[in-house]
Image (cartoon, rainbow, N blue to C red; front, top):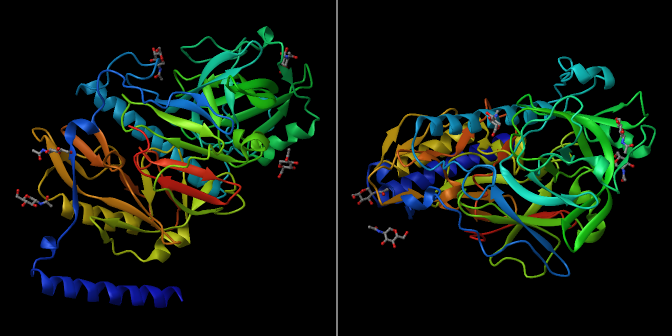
Length: 486
Ligand SMILES: *[C@@H]1O[C@H](CO)[C@@H](O)[C@H](O)[C@H]1NC(C)=O
Ligand SMILES: *[C@@H]1O[C@H](CO)[C@@H](O)[C@H](O)[C@H]1NC(C)=O
Ligand SMILES: *[C@@H]1O[C@H](CO)[C@@H](O)[C@H](O)[C@H]1NC(C)=O
Ligand SMILES: *[C@@H]1O[C@H](CO)[C@@H](O)[C@H](O)[C@H]1NC(C)=O
Ligand SMILES: *[C@@H]1O[C@H](CO)[C@@H](O)[C@H](O)[C@H]1NC(C)=O
């Protein structure tokens, strides 16, 4: 069946090409493409923050938090402007891409069953059983939530690719990195409780792929999580009052109170886990929100988006739902989608849908650049370059090999890119969801290929920009609607 459909596909492709060629011109690069136009300036962040109108609010069914990019004028962690083209700007973008590589490697290794022991180099290893090091890493979008009694405000990176919510905790027994808000101090909270290491909840950690241990002093439950880029958090697995918005407060929320935190989380107070395992925020609040949440990631770091829990009813205009899948039992934390094709400039890129379906695809808020099976990426890149012939290519950045110099242009025309899903749903990407913009002189196609066709694809956060992405986990579907935030 696989061979036959590929064969048929190739025949159909070449047939279609012949017709198109005959009808237009003998030169394939003159085939008509539908193009879109975007102002170059709209791809770049402004120096001041323009918050969107969807500030945090609650109606009786849903609660909304404001989403900001970790770096840029809307973040309280980053007062230096990242909008000028400087050397350090290059370094900053290169670092984002390097971390992204590490995250993707760790996700792939997690699902490829290659188990490492992440704690062998850590002094804290003595208190934690050396088991699988299941690692998932940082994202770039932050929301602010409240923890404890009285509630303390903490800005956390939200991550659909991991489950455990954690924050740095005093007294920072081993280490805390610099964060801008005061570090959470459980001794000042009336509602903080350690979990016993014999509790069933403590054993749940290992089913979420998180290391679990026991404090010899207090017999309380310890967790340890190490991310792909080498960062980690180790501490007490605890219960606390969690304030999503002033109207939505959860008692006994399970979270990690990190006493040894190191790595690249700089600035944010920790991580908000929105994965599918039962210790994630989505599962812990299932009774209230019925596993329904949505977000919109802003186009640039000078605008804001939102993260909403619960189905507020008024679902976004033009929303299209596709089936939510699970790649494997091992990958049950991840949100799988049935990606089957990609179009560039309104034309399907010539890749058999079996290339996508045999490896599978997940959607992740923490991965920056979309990863595709090698064959699919090569075809996408070729089609995109064809549609961008009018522009001068420039040097690559890290894993991005298709970059353009837009300096001197007010507007640029580009071939639109759309994802196609098995159930007939197509999702058009926003212009800001196509380019990773280092500066006006270096805007790169924000896709990369996996080493081969065996690893699964990941729909990253650049591609999700400005879309309302709706996770109806109970309904088994994920929806997309266009232009839902600035
Ligand atoms: C540039 O694009 C904007 C809309 O994106 C349009 O209003 C404007 O006319 C365009 N300018 C040129 C010179 O094409
Ligand atoms: C929680 O457990 C840690 C040891 O892991 C201990 O130092 C701390 O005092 C405990 N906190 C409470 C409130 O029991
Ligand atoms: C973390 O932030 C501090 C203070 O803002 C800064 O000095 C340090 O270089 C940062 N570290 C990393 C790894 O970004
Ligand atoms: C969470 O999942 C684990 C393993 O699948 C299971 O043993 C545990 O009972 C679950 N916990 C809850 C609260 O559903
Ligand atoms: C390239 O530029 C030419 C001349 O300005 C224009 O006619 C053509 O439509 C452009 N092609 C694309 C793909 O933008």
